Length: 483
Image 1 (cartoon, helix red, strand yellow):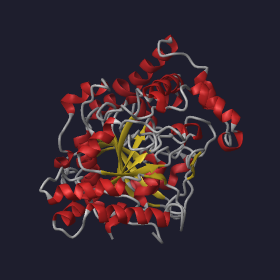
Image 2 (spheres, rainbow, N blue to C red):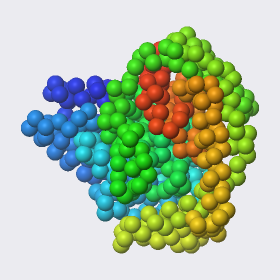
Image 3 (cartoon, rainbow, N blue to C red):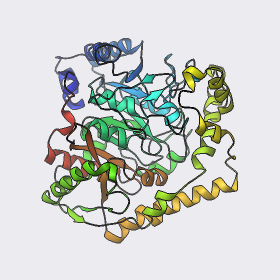
Image 4 (cartoon, one colour):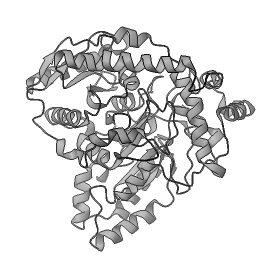
């Protein structure tokens, strides 16, 4: 079926005339209709784009006229619901207070997707405000979208990561690919738990303009797909310079027009891969995942990788103990700036107004409270010395004294660990990670392994993940029973 095909395979089918973008888009719209609110009621998709079919037909017209924009031409893509689109869909970030926020302008990454020929299929549910409303809120819940059901019949544990809807949609075959976002854990863990591929790029490689922020110094969008090759295609379209996001200017020298050229089935030969045992292995709750990662490490070694074990991150314990004001300060300031940029389209203008709305609608909005939001409202501004000291400490411990230090000491290409076990480390550093499926536990829970590297090491990480995927076979291609 079409949901099991790669971007390249679908593109070839359209090139051969055996498939149209309109038919493919309708296929996924029908599949969403059958599985999202009906059948197993996955509730991964909050809103379908009413213009999706029109966009697909226009792209078919272009193809017939001899104009093909690239590998994403006619490919249906879902977006996490913190990404603005200018086509009438709401951008809620999971908050009922923002249910009427309908941006007038595409986020820069959406503009780039459209230019590449993607069909924006709709918006995915997410943990409310990227899991920064209440400290006890489960990852599958938001007041605007309700409860997302795990495609494998399991329950997302709290801390599962806010790109839950996007990962669920990809795993269930509701789209070809999705765009999620990560501040700290929100792509790696959902991808791991859903048995799909998640790529969290270096912060600044993809524009954050038009994406509702949690902590702008750590935020980045990224691909969620069923194959590493598809993630590389999506990244090629998403990455680029944006004058409205000055951090992308610093990434300009590291950009590649086509990340697919780094897909190397032999990349593991001679690759130096470190295993950071301290902190990231041995947790009681991840024993089954650890066992699967141990098997994957054997596979890496068999494929020719040089495994340095242990290769511990010098600051791992310090990073694990970090308590920082960065999220609180940046959330309040970033949300206010995002809402201000929406002008008259914004139903709310500040975190304080959203808190008041929630208080006025407690049954829908305060099921788990809003402690984190209230703490953020009381936090300092971005010129607060405490915030500035915390941010400097965060990046020092995670970058030069953390990931950079261990990679330099052992000459590593990457670190490997279970799913999102080191998401706090890579998140505060703003460094890239790619998560790939490695199997499932006895109860059917899916497990992934993350490759983490230094800044702008996406080409090497993609190569390593792709080579591993080829050795292990199609773990990311299986669909849950009944889907």
